[in-house]
Image 1 (cartoon, rainbow, N blue to C red):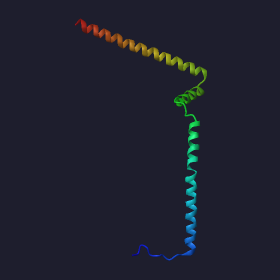
Image 2 (cartoon, rainbow, N blue to C red):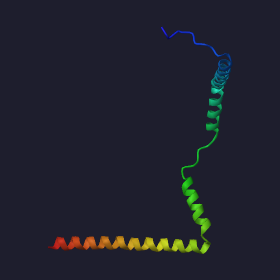
Image 3 (tube, rainbow, N blue to C red):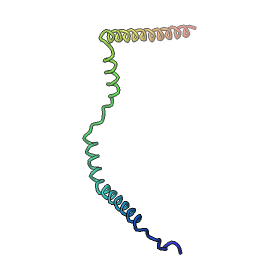
Image 4 (cartoon, helix red, strand yellow):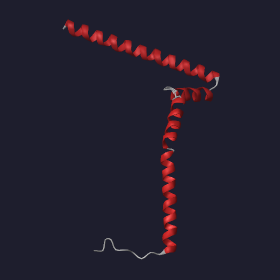
Length: 109
């Protein structure tokens, strides 16, 4: 049986290797012993820090927009948006009027 055969010991390299393993074992034992404290500190930190607001991206985009433009440019932008909304309203009213006209023509036939 070759499984339990005593291997020849090399004193110098075996003791150094053994010391490294014991040092590593003690490091891991300390790591395990300190785990509950680390977890508690992490949980306290997560509880004490507020999450970012939901509209953070919108706020950044708005701030970037206003920081780039002067007052006159902002006024012009509002004017263009108002004009576009008015044109859209006219378009919708035209479509509705055309639809009603077609409906009345078809009803007459």
